[in-house]
Length: 387
Ligand SMILES: Cc1ncc(COP(=O)(O)O)c(C=O)c1O
Image (cartoon, rainbow, N blue to C red):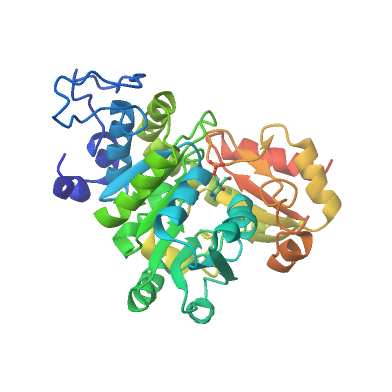
């Protein structure tokens, strides 16, 4: 489908027909898994579409067309994990001596990459409260090359005004990138708001079934796309054909899953706000959430991830140790509901003092709402909280 049609059709239709819908060689509606690592070249002087598995693969091409369609991107690239996608976005954009301004409460793996690894290659960063344009602006230095945003942030669900940040970045000639894992392309298409790169841990909502580790980067321009592709091919972090197929299959139900899961998340978040044993609830779908109005303007929904602080440490432990329907696990975005403990799981790599400063303390639990009946999920939390 041409880009103009792709970008104007309804997003539910786009999911199924925007890109990568049919195998161009056979017409198959399920793209075959092409396991080939190399391809016969009928004339070595003529460049073929497919030459070598690391650089091109038909299953991956179909997936990347589908991903590009989902976010109205010029190009999209599929990676072995969300971290590989984040690494490619930074490495494809920055070089030695460059500096990044980064959302302060980001995923723990991104924190680790920025603090313990990239400085070895001369790429530095400053964490800032990117919900404040003023704070973000103040963190920019003459060496700043890019802004790395996470919104809603993990696990505090803070919201960045992406349109305003994109305008600021354009004035300061900075590249903007966002980790869009939490909302998925179904609810948020950052490139439409002026952001340059959108990144996903496709392990989460894009895959959707807790059976896949993968990542994706979508780009607004072909120039940025070339740089990302360079890292994908020459750092060799491309997604394998089997996992490309799994993601293609997951994407077909993305809309149905997101709609249902978000509806349940609203019910659960509202119920949580009424419980005396809950100290606070972070869910941008609640009208009182500080980012609610911004997200209502820039996205099609509020997602299905909630975080909550319990009244006591013992309560948090009791819940995580006693839930029966929720899985106590790392990760999110699957069809099964997951309850996680950021301070001990996803954000354990952030030093304790820093976590406490940010509010990622030991009474904080994160909920990824799945497809189960919301009444059963509520009853499970209620029972576990009072055991
Ligand atoms: C917001 C966010 N970004 C990136 C990642 C990393 O993704 P992956 O585990 O697929 O490498 C995660 C993982 O939990 C995440 O929650």
